[in-house]
Structures are given as C-alpha cells and as structure tokens.
Image 1 (tube, rainbow over the protein chains, first blue to last red):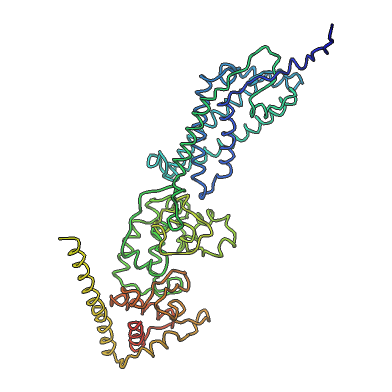
Image 2 (image 1 turned 90 degrees about the vertical axis):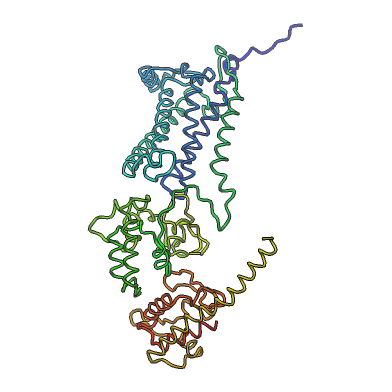
Length: 388
Length: 138
C-alpha cells in the first residue's frame, strides 16, 4: 500500500542547524563582553581600580588566547577561514547597502575587520593600561620603570584607544543587527548556542570542550589569586589591594601634628606651603600652636625633604604639577587636584566625615600613600586602630 | 632559667615598676607645682581645678562658649574628642592612662596651647596648679 508522505519542505532542509562557533570562541566572546562592560563601569574610580586592573589582565589573557585559537582552533575560529582583504570587506559592505547580502557561515568580510580591529585595539588598550598603572600610579609590573609624566601620557592614549574600541563595538553591533535581518537568523543567539542554519554544504565543528575548560580554569585561578585578600579582610583590618613602600616618618612630626589631627604627610603639599604654615604657627586655623623654635626647625627639615616636590606618591606628583607656583595652598582641600578628585561627592557624603579628615575614608591616610582601592566612603571617622 | 623562675622575675619587675612609676610621675607634677609656687601661687586645690575645668568662657571671635570639658569631657577617665578636628583624645586621668603627667615640657605645651584656645589667654600659675592637682587625683 502506498502511503503518501507530504513532500519535504526545502526550507527545512536548508535550515538544518550546525555548530559554527566552538565553545572556547563563545566563552571568549561573552567574557570579553562582560570584562569590557566592567571596564566602562570602573573607569576613573579609584575605589574600583583593582577590579579595573583585574578585568584588564583578564582581557589580555582572553585576547592572547583568541589570537592562539585563531591559528589552532576549529574551522570558523581560525583566521585562515576569514582572511578577507580590506577590498573584499568594502565590496561586502557596498553589496549589503545595495540590498544584496552575501551570506557567510563564519565571519563575513566586513565583520572580519571589526574582529581584527577589536583584537588589535584591545591588546593595545591592555598594554597602555599596564603602562598607565606603572607610571601614573607607580603600581603593577611596570612600577618604577615609567615616570609619572609619561604615565599620564599613557593614560591619555589608553583612553583614546578605549573610546576607539567602543566605536568599533558599536559598528560590530550594527553589523550583527543588519546581517541578522538579512539572513533571517538571530546571530546573537548563534554566538550563545554556537549553531547557525546551514544548507548542508559544510559540516559543523566540534565543541572543543577540553580547551574551553582549560581557559575557564586559568581564569578562575586568576580570580582566586587576585581577589582572595578580600576573604581575609576583617572590619578593623580591611584588605588593601594595592601596596607601596612606606613613606618616611618623623617622630617630631607625628607627635606635634598628630597631637590635634591626622599627621598629614608632608608629601600632600608643596614645601612653600609647609614653610608658611610653620611661620604662621601662632595663628594655625584658629589656634596658637606655641611650638618651640627647635620643634619648628625639626618639622621644617622633615617637610622640606618629603614635600610634594619629591613626588613620592601620585598625590604628591599631582599636587605639585597642577598647583600654580604662585599659589601657596595651606590645605590640601584647597588644591585644584583635591577638588577635581572629590568632585563627584555630594554634601551628604560629607556629613559623617569632614573634608580635612582624610582618614575618614582613606584607610592609608596616616601612611600618606593615598592608594587606590584603600578608600571607603562613609566610613566612621578617625579611630586609633586605623591602618598605618 | 626555668620558665617558672622567669615568670617570677618578670612579675617582680612589673610590681616594682608599678610601685616606682607613679612616684616618678608625682615628681614631675610636684616640680611644676613648686615652680608655680615660686611664681606666687599657693594652696592648690582639686576642687578649684575641677570648677575651673568646667567653667565656660565666651570666645571673643566666634561668640561660642568654650571650656576644657568641651574636648576632655567631664569624666577624665574616658576618651575625649577634639572640638574642631574630631581627633580622639586619650584619657587625661593617670589612673587609666599612665603616660599622662610624665613629661613636664608636654604638660606646659598643652596647658599653654589649650588655655589660649579656651580662655583666649594663658592660664595663671594658680589655675595650672589647681588643674594639675585635680588631674593627678583622677
């Protein structure tokens, strides 16, 4: 007996899903997206610098992995599968704008160049980020090898590269949107689940799960070793993600200045400011200090050696390089740099901590290092157990 | 030395220091009181010192009342707080803070600075002596 089966739908044959993106490529893609978002959230916030730095290292590891995977990976992850010339990319774009979309199972010629651009810009942003950290903050692997001024230049380049990346990301998203519409296939979902529909002329690729596991394990070890300090933190012993060699101390300075207030380290103001403060010691913000001449001499000597001009900290460098030589600020809160760094704090933030009580938020204020990551806004004011 | 003997020696040393140390401090204050007497003060009294310590004086510039207890509180065995900076001030009472009243220069420096801020003038030898006698008893 003849049984009449309905004819096969040609669209069904054409729309058989095959795996195009292997697991390592997808994990790379979405972790890069996550890290990129973290970078824009944490940029320019000293409180979050350790997250920014870690995400930067993670991006570096991901990009290096992606370059290696471009040679060793599965078919559509390999560079040779999408080694299109710029001319081909242009032709592809023109065809697309003319309404003739040319479908590629892997990256199309235009998309290829956003991939190469993002890889190159990403690596350059990571490198200039590490150079910024080493120069402008004197932290990280390049500490001491780059000066503050050069570090500031790297910071500027780092910023421009990041913005260029953002522009390229926007173009990439636009391309994904247009191609998704032209191909009647959600390419974002493809990057999540790994499959795209195929007419069967090409086979799928293996998932490469072992490689993906190795990549995840490396990143997990990175997270653990970078952030485990937070697990050991106690209320009176907060974890400081960044450290620097201790600054010089002076017994007379600690005793005389620390008797009434935080013994502000001399590195926070220029030498001329300390000279003026000590000369005007009989009218010191409403108090007559009545310091003996010998004490004044000792304090003056320490201040002269450790003042902002010695550039022993980022704060010192910034205060010295941004305060006009005609100005003699008597308080660090009068400097343009201080105002710039605290501009985003509202009056409500200053209810618990007075502006001159640096140690109200800066855990290392007594040490004078004012490191990023050692900041807790809204912390209770001065307690004797404060980190030194 | 056995651990027990070591512990005994340490205990003995600590006990002797505890007996000698307060006398050494008393010496510092006694010397200052003697000095104040030479300047014309006499009959130092803890009661007078206590009254002086809590007496408010209107500051000429700000119009605000100022007194010693503003920063040091009325209970000298507790920590105080600097009126402008908020810095914690360790207790003045030698009974809980043995470092107090051990350095004549320190005593004179703080009396000079704090009298000027609180009263707008230096304290008289009589006032300083009364306050020291009062603090010593706490």
